[in-house]
Structures are given as C-alpha cells and as structure tokens.
Length: 299
Image 1 (tube, rainbow, N blue to C red):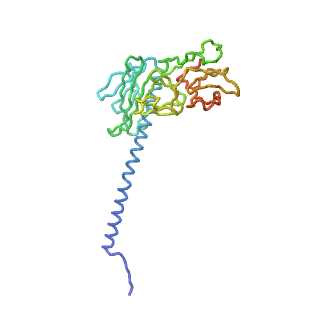
Image 2 (cartoon, rainbow, N blue to C red; image 1 turned 90 degrees about the vertical axis):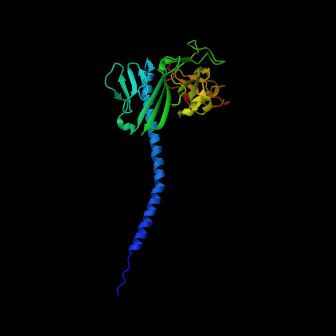
Image 3 (spheres, rainbow, N blue to C red; image 1 turned 45 degrees about the horizontal axis):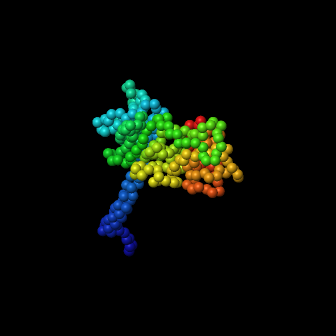
C-alpha cells in the first residue's frame, strides 16, 4: 500500500497564520525606518530648495540699485522690490518674478524642482538702513514646515567700510602714499552660507570666513565670536605687502586677521588662529584666505 503523506488543512492554516504574523512584524519594523528616511529626504530637499531660491534672489539683489520690501498679501507672504522687478509667492506657492509695471510672472525654478513643496516668504525693510531687507524663506510640504532660512539682502556697493587706518608698525612708505585698503561688502551676519574669503560685517566689525560654513538660525544672536575659529576670524587693521617680506622669505610678527595686498591688488587675510614665531609664509599659501571679489574690489 502506497504511503502518500501531505499537509492537512489545519497544518496549512497554521503555516499561513505564522507567515502572516511574520510579515506583519517585518512591516512594523520597516515602516518607521521608511518614514524616517522619507522625512530626512524631505528635509534635505527643502534645504536645497531654500538655499537655491535664496541664491537666485541674492544674485539679483547684489546687482541692484534699489531694494525694498513690499506689501504683504492675504496669505502673509511678502514682496521684495528689486529695481523694476518684484519677487513674490504666487497662488500655487511658487516663487515668481514680475515686472513692477505689470505683465506675466516668471517662476524662478521649474515646478519639478520644488518636488511637491511650496514656499512662504516674509520681507521687511531694515530700520534706518537704506536698500536693506531682512527676509525669511519657509519650505512646506502638505502644510507642514520643513525648513526655514533667514537672510539679509543688500546691494554689493551698498556699504563701504574702510578697515585699514595705515601701515603696520615698522613698514616703509608706499608708492601710492596712502597705505589704506577699502573693503566693500554687503555680507551681514545672518543665517546663511558663506565661502572661504567672504568678509562679514557684524556691528561694524569685519570678520573673514576661514572656510565654507553655514550659519544656523540659533547661532545668529550669539555672533561670529561665539562660533569662532576655525570658521571666522576678526580682521585687523594691519596691512602687509611684498616689500615687508624679510629673511628666509617670511613675514615676521604677523597676527591672526592681518591683511596682505599683493602687487596686483589681490587682498588676503591671515587665517591661522595663532601667532607663528617662525614667521608667516606670504600668499598664496593655505595660511592666507583670498578675499572674494564680492567683498573686495582690486585697486
């Protein structure tokens, strides 16, 4: 007699029940991880969107001659007037550019770049300062705020600060007879991104950016001194030139934050955090940060 053995109905039901319970447990374990991943991806996309929009606005503001904050719409979004153009948020939640005289609006970025996110923007004129606007960009997804970015806008030539009073002690006279360097900067201390060589004006004091850094919103009230080296260094009044190079091709008694003007007018800031008794190697070297053209015009 053949002995053919198989699964009974009860065994099959039990096996399917165990498999179902196992699958429920797997889904329960994976689901939170998936949600965390999606939220992290959303936050990253929101930050990229906010920074990209800000750079587009800042580029236009830097080159402007007239910069003011406009009226607030019914949704609480502000307007920024840049010369003959207006930057605003449209009804769909996209940032658009229009002519002040009217006409069709133009989106700053294509819809796909937003990845189903919307934008909110506030803008306000800085009190007692011409052509200066404080703005905040907020990125939303399904009504939930994902990221917020603050910045201060000002035309590049809107503020001039003469940071150098004269020659460093012991230096000989200059061919131009002035010994002064004029730094032109529109970069204020704000929650935004800076690159190496940027010059920041904080309450009338100039700071050089030692390396690329993003200032977070909670850092703003604390100032650059709180962040400190290796990200920021206070610019001093001393200026060095090639004629000051001494023995062994070094500059002696150079202090952190001192300036060096090359023969072609390029400006560098000494960004080592400590005085080097062995002397400083002149620029170009990693000890010196080349000041960005946005913050300094060669003379």
